[in-house]
Structures are given as structure tokens and as C-alpha cells.
Image 1 (spheres, one colour):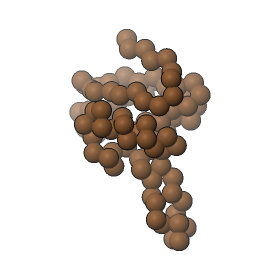
Image 2 (cartoon, rainbow, N blue to C red):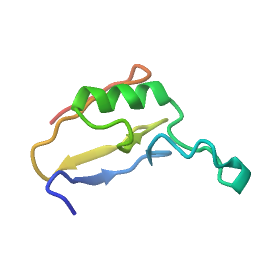
Image 3 (cartoon, rainbow, N blue to C red):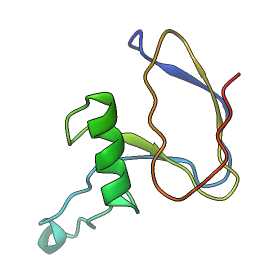
Image 4 (cartoon, helix red, strand yellow):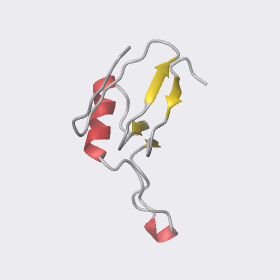
Length: 86
């Protein structure tokens, strides 16, 4: 585990770790997968200085609750939602 890890306090419904998926492998039986909102995931990575292939947390429905284990930089992108920092 790295020093930039997050502890999941409450995962919520449909919170997943996503990257850009596996395009070009359908002929091998591998679905494309990846973030549902690819542009929002790409923007989040750009905002925090990650490379384009870095994974993101994608959450829907009731969100999630996370606790950083150390100082972190966070970007929230995509559809409008309520975000609280405590």
C-alpha cells in the first residue's frame, strides 16, 4: 500500500475503480470496460496531475465516504453532485 492510499468508510452502491478500459481486445473476448464517463475520468486525472491511464473512483447513486491516510489531491468531475469535506 502506498502513502497516498484512501480508506473506504462506506463504498455506496456502484462505486468502482475504473481506468480507460481495454479497447481493441474484443476479438479475444475481452470487453472494452473502463469508466462510464470517460471524459470526466480523463479530466479528473489531468486536474490532479495523473497520467491518462491512472485509475479513478467512479461512483453513482448514493456516493461513497472516504478517509485519506495522508495528504491527497482530489478532483470531482462528471454530473453535478453534493460533495462534503470534513
